[in-house]
Length: 440
Ligand SMILES: [Zn+2]
Ligand SMILES: [Zn+2]
Image (cartoon, rainbow, N blue to C red):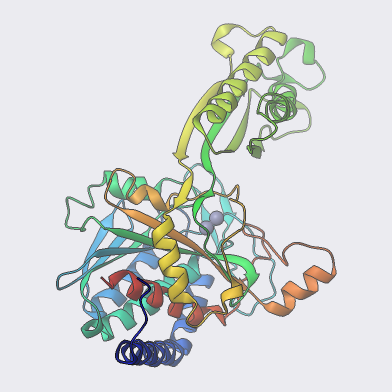
């Protein structure tokens, strides 16, 4: 029999949607009232970027702020990781994660708060550093969200866990926090894990599709060994620069000739380091490689292909076995797959203040990767959702479109910027999503 809403139930539904609207307004007011404080925090973080596992200043700020708000704080997880916990009655356990690290990129924006810092990398040189992936905004959102969730704790029930994670860029931080026994040290295992990332689409737009969203990835180093010598006498040496150069181009044939054309995979050599002088053939060449894939079969094809190319080059150069190239596997993450029900719930809650056409769910998975879900990869009960939040100035996006560019700037470029209007808006998005997850 068809059910017809009685006036009584219709009145209740109307009353609850009026309450919801009032509540959204209140959250928005709180976030915007906190905006100038949050923008100052953001600018400070932006001017003081820190590389993976060296985020001591940033994690100190997070710990101090969360403690001052009244969260139970655990510090020093995997060196710089921080957890802030609030047990607030019976209800779901929800974890909200932000990453802290920056990139070895020289900032070229003309922003008054641009980074001019350098840092010494663990594996060598002093490098310019910049938040070129927006992790400074992620931490700022976390602090804005934490303040409102604490102030509004009479309005929700459950356990809220904030995680400030080190070393996302090297894809090791999440796993390192788990391996450093964060769950044994008192961090509750979550039912839901939520994360948000800046993305160079207009402020007020979000990508939150379901299913596979981001590629799996490996980061590995290949070292070619040769025999150093005089640049004038290559026949008396074995030149690792020539070997490495062949490798860079031959690797691309793995993608074009060995991966099925319907599959998506990427192999990028992000660094080729060898030699110092014009007239010296160096003894070795280092290639830093990043792989992207969506299944184990393609991952194995890429790794086997790299090994074969390396050995083929070694044979062609008549190297003795002891000088064959070495491979060092540095990190690995699995593809990121958003939970369908969780993403849909969050999208419907966001639709109360983001125009529904700006909540975009049908974008294809991207080849970028994350280690966010590795916080819960061993926990069968946890589902997760990772939202891409538009952080580009709308006028810059429109100008880029006129110039035929897809984005005005892109993550990891020195021109990457987060529009300040996103600071309070991202806070509202985070709070709204959390409130939704704490509902029954
Ligand atoms: Zn990044
Ligand atoms: Zn990032």
